[in-house]
Length: 240
Image (tube, rainbow, N blue to C red; front, side, top):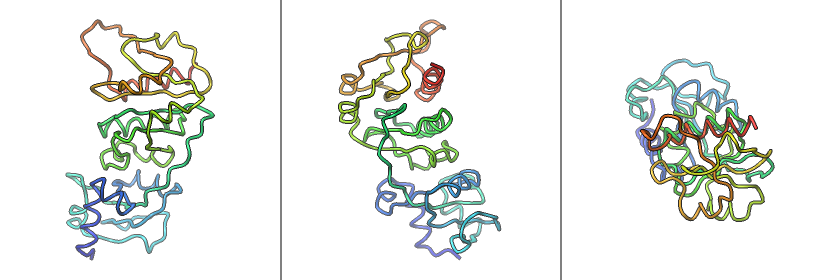
């Protein structure tokens, strides 16, 4: 039986301040948990309603009732398994390939999808402004489907990073060079902005190259979803 203090701790990890305080985050769903167990991210505890076969120390697995799991979960309809992991230390951003940079991206679903896209397109480093949504937010983790274990995510002063990097910096704007006509080099930084405001004025100053995704359907849509734009841009970067 799980004691109330454990349930309280796990429930508190839905909030960023408690994740930071305890250095822990929660993942739900067997597929995502298996992905993390296969990575270097350390396990704190696995809670399950079934006798799951998992590749980890059995002492780290605890059987719980469905009601106990529901109390821990952030989901309306919880899965049969929930994992608590230690937040890993971010590695230094290696500036020898492509780096994706996010400027104040707020939506957890967008963030999670962008992390999956980094994994798909082989982008090893994702640098985020300090105001970007926390990558260990439960909704972000649900959207990553385990890809978070394969992408180095760094939160930093984005302007400072862009100011000192020797890589060419490409910003995504409504007006800029047509993406299809850009000859991308073998390395650089792609900057994507906030869902509503785009790239901030401060960060614009560091974008020496402005690119845009051409619109073919008239002016009926104001802009593309940031995760959709990321997919299109990363495909062009890798294709080029």
